[in-house]
Length: 408
Image (cartoon, rainbow, N blue to C red; front, side):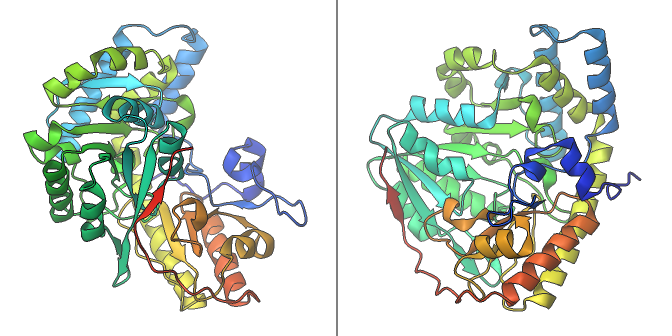
């Protein structure tokens, strides 16, 4: 059993990650504790670390050897089949630089300037900004918070997708930042809406390795051949094995006709992945699963203990139990109308605020539990205590409605 709790805050700052050095207290200039960037504070799996060390000392720092991408295709296909029951040919998989590059190409291929991209919120921040950067309109569909859990608003989603200008749906599952793992029934509902309205689907599934015990990730494109024909999937080891800085994601298109339409773009995109990223991802999928299971168990305890502590200290806090990812969304409306200021100026904890997760969420905080337990519980204690003692007036939650953001 690996010990993920040995590192101190001072050591993490010395490492120099963005998460621990990128924000300071706006009033005092002091370094904040890192609870914002979506990365883990754990060294990656030992087999991956060993492979990277050997590659660097051997001089594998040039251009991409042809065998590396083929190895990654093989291991990705094996992982998708063994872990999620999705049988995909290796030829359906292309190593690329990152997930957002896939999204940009998908928007360019599937839509024209002025057309609409539909995004359920709260959402990963770039999903709300990239459409406008490319001259498209982002249609935000706020989700529902019912019985302590987030769920897609299927009625509002249908309304948004049924518009003639709607051409692409961005679906994130496991869902950053809510921590939901969508059920098969929910995914089937979304697939029916997509097929009925004729939109394509960009499926961001990079958090799939981090489903919590008791929950199962179902790849959206695996639902049926008809769904696969309209779905482009982004997969990666970046979250599960903490490899984001090595820049390697996988474009997965299981439908042969859709893959043919992407052939020229996929070939061009394949030149963006790095040899070290491709190598690390391959080894992670082939030899890093035991380490992944230990991380999942560790995160599960972090999330459970942190939620219990937060709700004990701040009983009116809305902190859902997570089903996947290490990211969570707290609704602090009962305590503050500016929880980011409370977190960063009073608690000394760096967070992401809800205003960048969607227009309907001014009182949300996005937090990251992938850190040594003693540090995570300290951050939770600081945050919850600061919220309770905050002098800032509570915020009246706004009614959720479909929000249209026109292109820049």
